[in-house]
Image 1: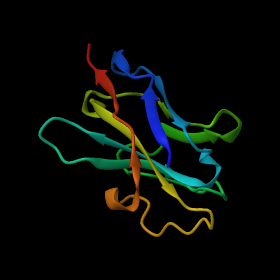
Image 2: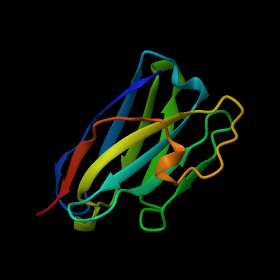
Image 3: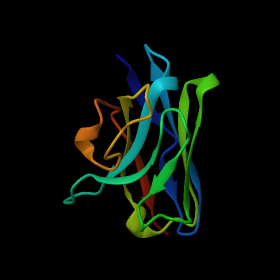
Image 4: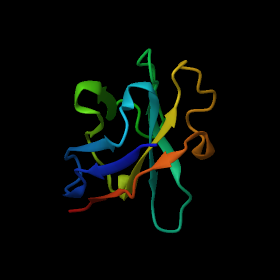
Length: 128
């Protein structure tokens, strides 16, 4: 079982950048698929990006494609989400999630119920 802790959120002006981190405790993240989700007030939690456990394959929501970059550093047991060219509509609580997936076989990596472990989130606010 792994515990996830996000950090790196904050208040940033439109056009600015942030790097979110998701650190795993209690287990190595090497064999976990990682997803980043976000939830704005009044909205459902939506998938932002994911990275596969073994082959490093990635995916992005259309709304963030070309602006956000997901990565992982297994040596640091950490996954990252780089947020560039931020817009006010990116304001939300950002969560990372993990699924034990040693065979790199996750089928629906953008689905919330594909993941077994969740962090508590880090707030991103984009405002001038």
